[in-house]
Length: 310
Image (cartoon, rainbow, N blue to C red; front, top):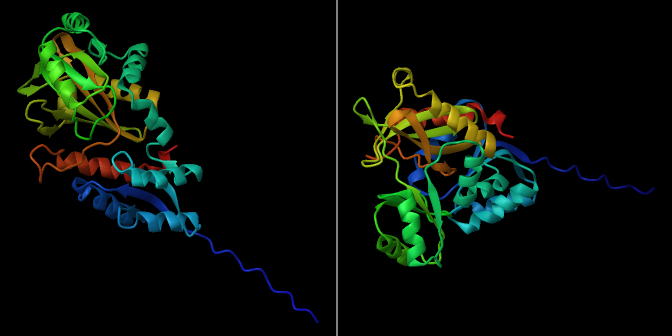
């Protein structure tokens, strides 16, 4: 009698609700708090850092673990994480900010044109090419006015690096170009915000899976303050929500921030279009950190709204 061996049952992978990759030292409060919030809500989180990156890739490849949703906080600055991102992309994991959509926002020139076409108010802007003549640059400066802002068309680093404010001359641009050779830049009119009460009318607005959370942000001190319901009513700040919602509808990211400044005559300008890697350092630990209440609310909304990731 021949005894047939029974096929081994395949072991199902362990399923985690949210995977998060991170490598930035200043995320050392933000990421663990997301992890703890998931646990409190009965969700299973999985953190990926440089120490367990390759083990994680192996476990996913061997179908030992899988993620329902994924939040990438690393691949933009560390190419080692791109392998993980590509692997998850192939497996059709739902990303908080999908890699294909991130590509849309990498080029600020294209974003600028898209916002203009969508009737979203942005400052007057010209493109500066490294091959531009002195005369061509001078003409562009005359158009945008002095002072003006110089910002790279593509991201240089996190935290607004590569942006020059209060530029006045062609020589300022040349000096800046020496630090970032071969970059294409935007020459942008510098918005002059009005005062609302005792605060500068400049805001960083966060979008979290449908929830819009505005913060006061001083462009000189970089100090954040919470926008209250009274602020929204007293200073008529509903355009912050409208503009941010319209940007979200265009780019369909789950989590991003935008900067909006208000000039006299109540003109709201989107001055820094869309940032998918938001600095979440806390104000209680860093002078220029985001208000603790705002960070807590962002984390709460992010975890509670995971089901809205598409």
